[in-house]
Length: 158
Image (cartoon, rainbow, N blue to C red; front, side, top):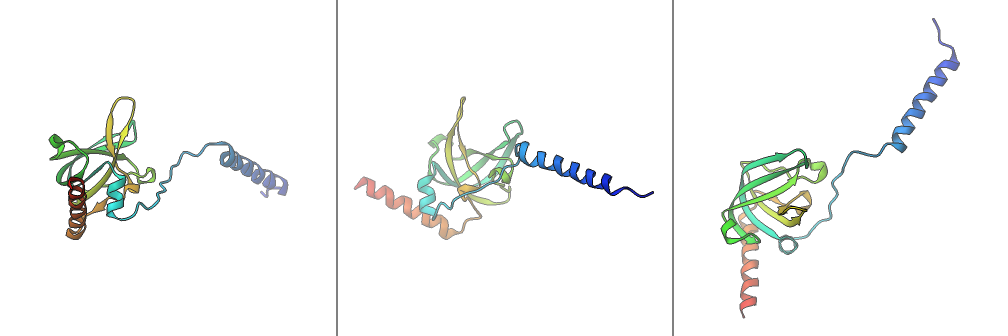
């Protein structure tokens, strides 16, 4: 049984119309992460509210808000946090890398650059792919940030 050329053409036209409806009239659901480079370590420290090196010890997923809260043990802290929090810090990130969420591994040492965020109920630290966190920072990177923070302190006390 052969199809008539008219029916084939109508089917293709119908499919194209439906496809165009989806393209132009259905809002996009996807997200994409796009970041501007923040510069060297010192510039990143200056743009951040919280800077520390530590290890991920726990993570709690909040599917409703599409984020996760992570707790880190802190080895070195350069900026932010209260003295009582100096051993442990909590930081949030988006669940997906498409939404700029940063993926941490429990076995890595990480240098975190985070900003202080505020919602209706609370303040919290947040980090993302755009924060340019460093996985397994070198001793030179850690020392460089430490020296710069000490130089800044000595200039303030003079």
